[in-house]
Image 1: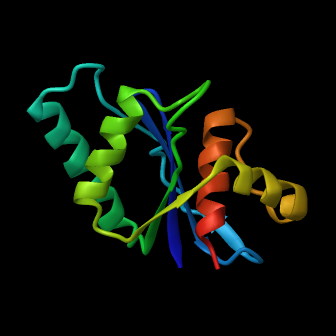
Image 2 (image 1 turned 90 degrees about the vertical axis):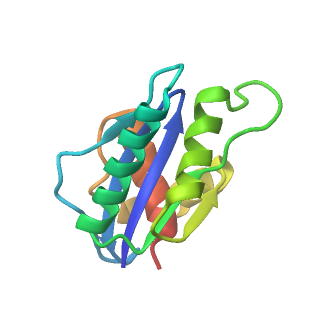
Length: 137
């Protein structure tokens, strides 16, 4: 199974794709980790974003996309940028989409940290990795 984890933060989508299972998985070796939109995107900006994401999913035969669940209220609530990105991805995704909450990721990290040997050192990519990991079987 090929799962893409997308960490939405501000106007950027950080992307990590894993293949395999939770017991035995590896990252898809592509130098593509970030896709963004300007703060005030035009239709052309959105078109470029959608075509790039669709091509990435097709090229890597993505079976599932997992996205971090945005906070809707309180401190750190998802802003306009993440809202726009989430809507675009929901509208155009060529693969089924699941959402994962940050508390679920934290619980999994406590239980299964030893299985995550390929986790990137960069904080945003590590979060995208964790999100993709949640989608593995």
